[in-house]
Length: 616
Image 1 (cartoon, rainbow, N blue to C red):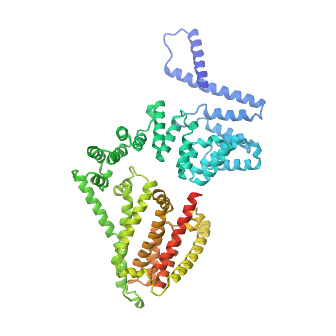
Image 2: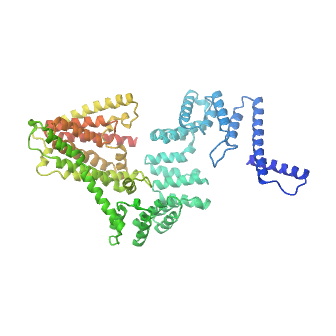
Image 3: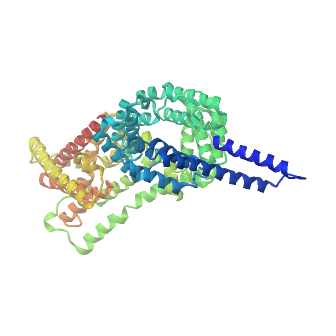
């Protein structure tokens, strides 16, 4: 504002002098005025820089003035709209020289954290941390708080949440004002400390008139379903600037507090926007489906489908509408969607022929079956085909919780794709486990169920041998993860802890725990999954394939498939080893029980470690 006042003053003097000394019939053109304005702006800027230069020539050790000069160059002619500083090169030279002259000075390091980013910020924070350790008394509590806060923010952006929590707590020790920061609330929310996060966001310091800060606060409260507090914050935003409120977020907030009529009003308002109308219309339909009557549901679904075929190509949303209002009329596009859905399911059933039929033809064409293995087999290739199609259908069913993701795959478009996270990821994981388990157990009968019980091994022998194999597996996998990870330079989450290598996807497990509780994870992932996976790989696949290829090839094949479905390239050898060891248990005991014990111990230990890490 001071700079603008100076410019206006120069313009006024220029106009008065010009008007008194020259007879005129009209004012100059606007281009002339703009030229004068530009020249005045640059002249004032240069004059101020000259004042800084004159002062620093007399007082070269005036660090405060050097920093103030940097700040002036940083903001004087900065274009907020273009996010561009025409004096960036000069600013960089000033700040680099400042840091070179005072590499460990607290005031300099704190200032540089305000504009540095990337590797430069990483190096700066590392230097600041070393400087604090070397001379802690040279740093004020406020300065140390800034450094630790920036470190926390940096770690949070890099998704190193535990380190972020550690350093935001240190920042709060030196400067308690950070206890009301948005970053602290985000960290608390990540670690499911929702009540503490609400208390943090409720502090008076954070309830400022800053619209951006208030909107961030409201969004965080909405994320943790603190709808009443979020509504209060949105109302505060409305009183400051009614045009700033996000209508979609306000609608979800009102829905959360049970104000369904008001919520629908804002959902409808959101559909008027010029961008992403499709998503707004879908949100309105999902709201109507959950809380409104049949007429509203039909209207909003029709409006959503009018955006094109890709919005509901498999009629998934139409089926949801069917369950809520079964007597509604079906349109041709709805019927076509159901036909497409059935076609996809049929295709998933046929796809396993790609790997099942070659095994059949190889066995008959090349006659490579070992004669010594000829016996009455428990399962055949039909069962292998059944299990394979079950895996594909279970994977397909798991995506039903996120129709937008499924629709984008079907229509080959990335429009409105959502990421499966949070409770949806937990629901997807649960749905996959249940569907695949039911499909797998369908291959059992009174005759085949005997494969679970060994004839010659006692229960104690089953347990002892399984634990011995487990210890061998952990030693080998630990060495591979440590040595292989170091040799290939791979940063993998499993490198830090080899005990979690077979707990499926860590994110899936955490989402399952967050959605349904830790007991559900122990029952499903710790017990149910080992049973049906051993039935599938060491039971059906191993038995079915060794009817047509050598037993050792069948062992390798089932281990390879077991490794592939876990979807981790780096850990593929670990999963392959697991399949080999478990297959050897099946072969030696002629039953699935020791493999199930081996598998269960592994998964339960992995779950225990994950659970402990989440509560540290």
